[in-house]
Length: 142
Image 1 (cartoon, rainbow, N blue to C red):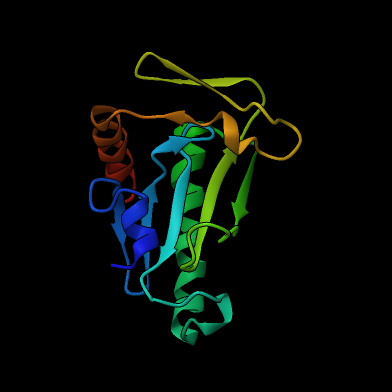
Image 2: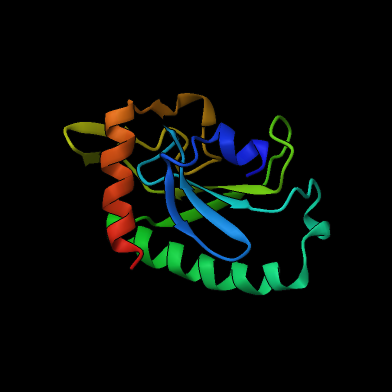
């Protein structure tokens, strides 16, 4: 796996693997259900991905939105392709909602609602929380 995928905690954060992409739980939850959609390729520019990766990405986005709608009841969803620190192609997937969502006794506010997501306010999950939340999301991806 490329360094960006490893930085986001692979394999502990793996939600679902596809031919060209991985869906990972974002260890620092900007909002409840924040994910990373990471290309398995070593590409550092979106345009370098093979044509098949773009077709597959459409199917994955539909699955992500279905799962997160059921899990968080988001009102909007943001796909952020930042790639400033982590060079390989990836998107931060941030479900957006007014107020907070609760999971396993923790509160997850959307600090930026209705403006841009506030990445700096993300809640860092423990290894145990990552395992539990990843497991819950994996079950919804089937």
